Length: 226
Image (tube, rainbow, N blue to C red; front, side, top):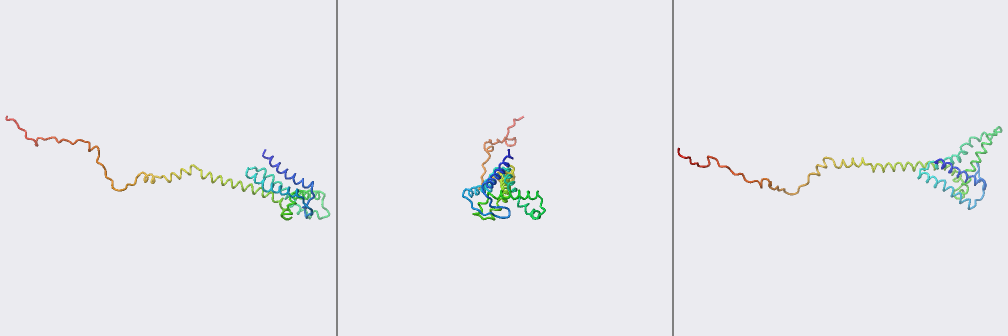
């Protein structure tokens, strides 16, 4: 199911590019520009496509953790940039008279891919310039990957910070430090203000006085005469 996102995003980008190629003449061709006029509908569709490819889909995929959507955009960006990577190395082979038919067909396919990838961004050149619009297809891959990675890193560090703040062991350690033996002993001894007068012991107050028993020496005893 997740790979369906990859296929859908990649095929939608290819279908939009082929729509421009089939119904409208090319403006950007490999090695040059074919000047022409752009209609209002074509221009509006180009701006919507650029907005979807560079903002809506990458942000949605990054926030919702849809990696396969970002992967689909990245692969489309690789396809758009592939002719620019390969065709300059094939220039010497194509310039010679002994160029093989396979090389010529391969170069034709790469030029067609280049024109297909550049077609949706051609009307934007009227507002942003040819040089800016021409490199837009090769910016899709880095934007999709960097934006996805940046959002995931931000989310990781945010969750780690929240987990650290809500850690119960950290709260217990902090409480134990604040309520240490010294602090408990200090808190248990109230502060005494003024002079303290202790009351007499109730046990001593209520205890009857001991009666002194008379001794023989203290009394005169009359002894009968023998």
